[in-house]
Length: 128
Image 1 (cartoon, rainbow, N blue to C red):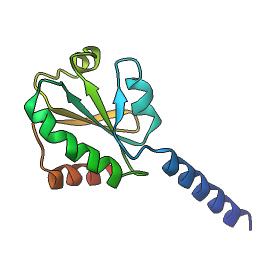
Image 2: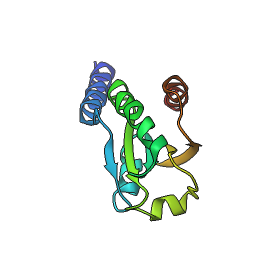
Image 3: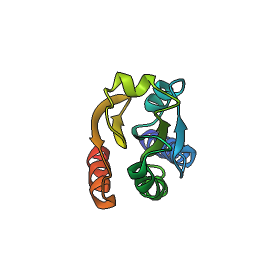
Image 4: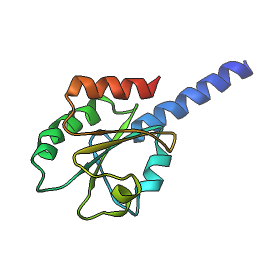
Protein backbone atom coordinates (compact mmCIF):
# COMPACT_ATOMS: atom_id res chain seq x y z
CA UNK A 1 0.00 0.00 0.00
CA UNK A 2 2.92 2.38 0.70
CA UNK A 3 4.25 1.97 -2.84
CA UNK A 4 0.83 2.72 -4.34
CA UNK A 5 0.50 5.81 -2.19
CA UNK A 6 3.95 6.98 -3.24
CA UNK A 7 3.06 6.56 -6.93
CA UNK A 8 -0.20 8.44 -6.40
CA UNK A 9 1.61 11.28 -4.63
CA UNK A 10 4.25 11.53 -7.37
CA UNK A 11 1.56 11.57 -10.08
CA UNK A 12 -0.36 14.33 -8.26
CA UNK A 13 2.84 16.42 -8.11
CA UNK A 14 3.36 15.89 -11.86
CA UNK A 15 -0.21 16.97 -12.59
CA UNK A 16 0.16 20.04 -10.38
CA UNK A 17 3.40 21.04 -12.12
CA UNK A 18 1.76 20.50 -15.50
CA UNK A 19 -1.15 22.77 -14.59
CA UNK A 20 1.29 25.48 -13.47
CA UNK A 21 3.09 25.50 -16.80
CA UNK A 22 2.02 28.33 -19.09
CA UNK A 23 0.07 27.72 -22.29
CA UNK A 24 1.55 30.76 -24.02
CA UNK A 25 5.07 32.12 -24.38
CA UNK A 26 6.37 33.84 -21.28
CA UNK A 27 8.43 37.01 -21.30
CA UNK A 28 12.10 36.29 -20.59
CA UNK A 29 14.43 39.05 -19.42
CA UNK A 30 18.04 39.21 -18.34
CA UNK A 31 16.71 39.27 -14.77
CA UNK A 32 14.41 36.21 -14.86
CA UNK A 33 16.37 34.09 -17.36
CA UNK A 34 18.29 31.85 -14.91
CA UNK A 35 15.26 31.31 -12.69
CA UNK A 36 13.09 30.35 -15.67
CA UNK A 37 15.45 27.82 -17.24
CA UNK A 38 15.92 26.15 -13.84
CA UNK A 39 12.22 26.15 -12.95
CA UNK A 40 11.00 24.04 -15.88
CA UNK A 41 12.34 20.78 -17.27
CA UNK A 42 12.35 21.83 -20.95
CA UNK A 43 12.55 25.50 -22.01
CA UNK A 44 12.75 26.95 -25.51
CA UNK A 45 13.65 30.64 -25.66
CA UNK A 46 13.01 32.69 -28.79
CA UNK A 47 15.54 35.54 -29.01
CA UNK A 48 13.91 38.19 -31.17
CA UNK A 49 13.59 41.93 -31.89
CA UNK A 50 10.62 44.06 -32.92
CA UNK A 51 12.31 45.20 -36.15
CA UNK A 52 13.13 41.64 -37.30
CA UNK A 53 10.90 40.33 -40.12
CA UNK A 54 11.87 36.65 -39.74
CA UNK A 55 11.20 36.96 -35.99
CA UNK A 56 7.63 38.01 -36.78
CA UNK A 57 7.28 34.93 -38.99
CA UNK A 58 8.37 32.65 -36.13
CA UNK A 59 6.10 34.22 -33.49
CA UNK A 60 2.86 32.37 -34.43
CA UNK A 61 4.73 29.06 -34.50
CA UNK A 62 6.11 29.67 -31.00
CA UNK A 63 2.63 30.62 -29.76
CA UNK A 64 1.06 27.47 -31.22
CA UNK A 65 3.74 25.22 -29.76
CA UNK A 66 3.43 26.83 -26.34
CA UNK A 67 -0.21 25.73 -26.32
CA UNK A 68 0.45 22.29 -27.80
CA UNK A 69 3.27 21.52 -25.37
CA UNK A 70 1.65 22.91 -22.22
CA UNK A 71 2.61 20.68 -19.34
CA UNK A 72 5.63 19.32 -21.20
CA UNK A 73 7.74 22.31 -22.28
CA UNK A 74 7.77 26.06 -21.75
CA UNK A 75 8.36 28.58 -24.50
CA UNK A 76 9.71 32.05 -23.81
CA UNK A 77 10.38 35.23 -25.76
CA UNK A 78 13.46 37.35 -25.07
CA UNK A 79 13.70 40.76 -26.74
CA UNK A 80 17.39 41.08 -27.60
CA UNK A 81 17.25 44.88 -27.86
CA UNK A 82 15.96 45.22 -24.30
CA UNK A 83 17.93 42.33 -22.77
CA UNK A 84 21.51 42.17 -24.12
CA UNK A 85 23.13 40.00 -21.42
CA UNK A 86 21.61 36.63 -22.31
CA UNK A 87 22.29 36.97 -26.06
CA UNK A 88 25.86 38.06 -25.30
CA UNK A 89 26.36 35.05 -23.01
CA UNK A 90 25.16 32.69 -25.77
CA UNK A 91 26.95 34.47 -28.63
CA UNK A 92 23.68 35.24 -30.38
CA UNK A 93 24.83 36.93 -33.58
CA UNK A 94 21.64 36.52 -35.63
CA UNK A 95 17.94 36.43 -34.88
CA UNK A 96 15.60 34.74 -34.56
CA UNK A 97 17.68 32.44 -32.44
CA UNK A 98 16.15 29.65 -30.39
CA UNK A 99 17.90 28.48 -27.22
CA UNK A 100 17.04 25.01 -25.91
CA UNK A 101 17.41 24.07 -22.23
CA UNK A 102 16.82 20.86 -20.30
CA UNK A 103 16.97 20.86 -16.50
CA UNK A 104 18.62 24.31 -16.55
CA UNK A 105 21.40 23.19 -18.90
CA UNK A 106 21.92 24.74 -22.32
CA UNK A 107 21.57 21.99 -24.94
CA UNK A 108 21.49 23.63 -28.37
CA UNK A 109 20.47 26.63 -30.44
CA UNK A 110 18.91 27.21 -33.83
CA UNK A 111 19.25 30.35 -35.96
CA UNK A 112 16.62 31.51 -38.43
CA UNK A 113 13.00 30.64 -39.05
CA UNK A 114 12.38 26.98 -38.30
CA UNK A 115 9.36 25.18 -39.78
CA UNK A 116 6.86 24.09 -37.16
CA UNK A 117 7.34 20.37 -37.81
CA UNK A 118 11.13 20.66 -37.50
CA UNK A 119 10.79 22.58 -34.26
CA UNK A 120 8.40 19.95 -32.91
CA UNK A 121 10.98 17.25 -33.69
CA UNK A 122 13.63 19.23 -31.79
CA UNK A 123 11.37 19.66 -28.76
CA UNK A 124 10.26 16.01 -28.83
CA UNK A 125 13.92 14.98 -28.75
CA UNK A 126 14.42 17.07 -25.62
CA UNK A 127 11.41 15.47 -23.95
CA UNK A 128 12.74 11.92 -24.28
